[in-house]
Amino acid sequence: MIEKIQITTAHAPKPGGKYSQAIKVKNIVFLSGQLPIDIKTNIIVKDDFEKAFSKCFENISAICQAAGGNLDKIVKLNVFLTKQESSPYLDEVIPRFFKPPYPARSRVFVTRLSKESQIEIEAVMIL
Image (cartoon, rainbow, N blue to C red):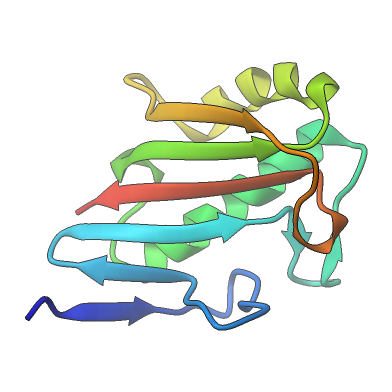
């Protein structure tokens, strides 16, 4: 049987349902989708796309650290967006948090996200 280890940190938003911030299986960590929630205020960043992407990556970074890694160990990002005009900001913000080679990435446009967020990002990290 595969051992699943739950990863939890107070430095990222608490799950809003029946899921974990991340699950570690062997040396792979699967991070749940992160909304651009400011954990100090519990408010979702909206309309300032640069700040929203940054907040998502800050939350992802906190979970990576709790799992014993960092953003450099991220190999895959899945980015969900509700607004086409937010897309260029992703490529502006990525180099602030990641260095080449950048993670593999999917960018998916959706009609709606949880809590009326405009952005959600999930990740896979290898330790």
